[in-house]
Image (cartoon, rainbow, N blue to C red; front, side):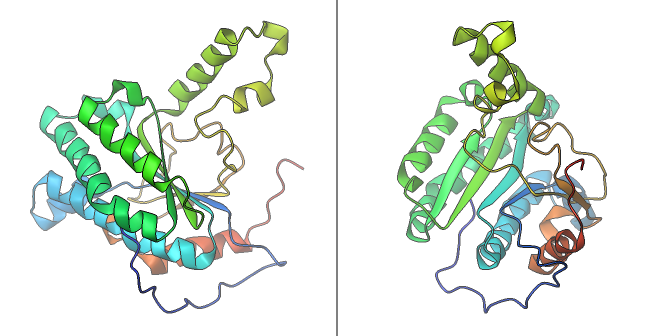
Length: 247
């Protein structure tokens, strides 16, 4: 998990605004390009993933500086189980180690950690680390770091519908509000902007319900090289767009 430095960076320059638009409350990021970054630098894929974890830190700091309330990051999809066993294990170890090492600093900095996905499918050690981080950071009020791990947008919708059925709702009772109340993200504002790094232009089963009206921003930069300046460019582009929500 990323560390928020005790000494914050100097205040970044103001974003270009259009029509008085505010900074997005919720920014979601598909952190793509770790493996390509590793190949480009001639290092093992695990090192690329470690560099990707490190890259979250300055983005989280900048998000706090900008007044972003929720930062959601796509850390591991359910489809990623199809990767090699060694790579999957490395990703789990990164999550466990990051949570264990960074939780005290996240608590001191007021970061609330939330982890969403099918956590019951994870190894016991990973679930234990997650549970400890969630318990320790629940009072954080500065920003919510929403880590999507073993996550699938389609699975989330299936699970929400199953909860509707388990709660005794009949078909006429099930509407958008009932499903939204049972999503993993219940109680969190929908993402205003969804950023994807690494050059591909798709959302890859990420927050597909919640991002129905999110602004999309695609960057060619590989995630480990995606820094605060490009994050600012994404927020600046968001500020210049006109959101009509179908109207």
